[in-house]
Image (tube, rainbow, N blue to C red):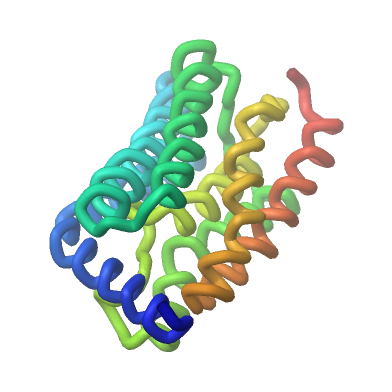
Length: 217
């Protein structure tokens, strides 16, 4: 299959997936908004609720998007199974460290790290789909926040920069792996918004490690 055919096939996959899953876009945007509000106006249950939202987004991206749709229904092959595995493992890590152990704590305080996190969040939820609309023939022929792996990963990095305690390094591994893998969809599938995934993922990861040195455990 020539490169043009590959790009067109993937865009047909995006189109079909979005047509089937479009109600979930509303749900996932609402969940993303809830996570942000709970980080700004912290409550007793904020940390576990935000972590639970991340668990849902990561497991949805891994199981429903990568495995059920693109691997099984669309016949995408082994790459999509591997992608699904990354997101299932990531979701389990957020479940263990964020929900069960409550090792993740979020609070927007307005410092420079939080501001960078906010920029990354805005990219994932607003700028990413705008770039997709401008470069990939318009919705629904491009990935969108919540139901696709790449914008979920970007959102995750932004939210982790709102942590007010050290972020366990292990929970940053799968987001970093996927950010580095963004080279593939960006330049093979021509999903140009994923250039931002690569850049913001690396910047987010390094910044989280730097911030960890300044935060309590």
